[in-house]
Image 1 (cartoon, rainbow, N blue to C red):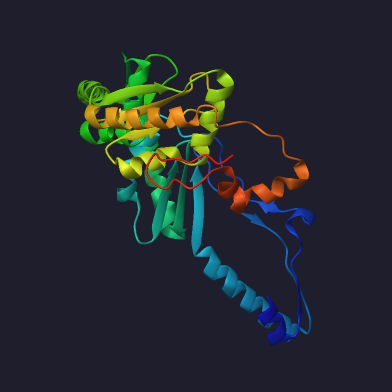
Image 2 (tube, helix red, strand yellow):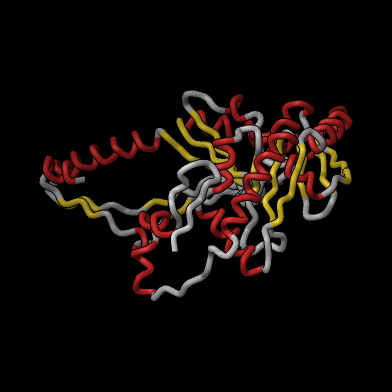
Length: 310
C-alpha cells in the first residue's frame, strides 16, 4: 500500500475489519463447509487519472492473491477421516495441498484456486460414497490393548485391510470397512492388538506424590527420553488429572522389561524428592517460557540418571 501511495500520490483507505460490515459469500452448511470469503470497501481519493492507476494496481494485487484459495470440509464423520488420510497423496499435487485434522474433524484444501475446487469436489464425492458403503463391526478388546490401535498403529490396520478402527471409552473397538473388507479388518485389528507386549508401571502413592511425579515426567518430556534411548519402546505418560497414574510401555518384552527396571530405579530416587511450592504471581513471568526448564529440573546427564538439587 505504501508503494502505491508513493507512486500515485493518492490516499488509499482500508478500514479495519472490526469497524466495517463485511459482505460474505455464504456457502451451504452441514458436513461440508467451504471457506467464507469476506470483502471490505477500499476508498481511493485523488485526481481521477492517478486514482484509476491506483485502482489498477490494487486489482493486480488482488488478482494475484485470489489465484490461491483455501477451503474447508468440516464435521467429517470420525470413521471416514482415516480413509481420507490414506488417500492424501492421491489428492495432493504441486498445485494443491490437503491437510487433515483428526481432532477437529476438519479437512483443509489450499493452493491454486482451480485445483482446490476440483479437489474439493473429489473429497466431497469420496465422503458421500463412504457414508453409504461403510459397515461398522464391534469387537471386544481389553482396554489395556487399545494403545496398539491408536495413531500409527491404526494407520497400519488401514494399510493392511483398508479398514478404519475407532477406539471408544469401553472395552469394545469398532472396525469400519466395506463388506468385502470387514473380515480382513477384524483379523488385522486382532493381530495388531496382540502384536506387542504392554507393561503398566504404576507411579507410587500417595496420590499427591504420584500426581507430582506425573507432572514432572510430562514437563521433561520423559516419553521422548525413553524413545531416544530405546526406539523400540513406546512410552505413554499419564495425565496428572487422570484417574489412573501409570506409565504404559509398549514394545518387545525384553526391552520393555529393561526400561521398566530403569524407571523403577528412577522412581526410587524421586520418592521424597519432589514438593509443591507457592510462587507469588508477580514472579510467574520469571520462571515460565525460556526459563521453565532451567528452573524446573536439572539436566539429565545420562539416560535415567537424574540428580535432585535441594
